[in-house]
Amino acid sequence: MKQQIMFFTLAILAVAAVILVSRKDLCEIRYRTLETEVAVSLACEILK
Image (cartoon, rainbow, N blue to C red; front, side, top):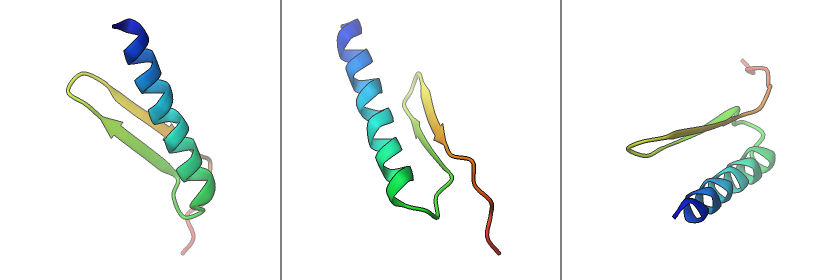
């Protein structure tokens, strides 16, 4: 069971990292479940 949770978490982080790299307008992605929240952020400046 713990292996499945770790695999799921790593998969979510990998997808979030790919989205952040491919989309230059995003600075942060958050994924929430009932028990946990995963946030992946990238240092960026807000363009006006």
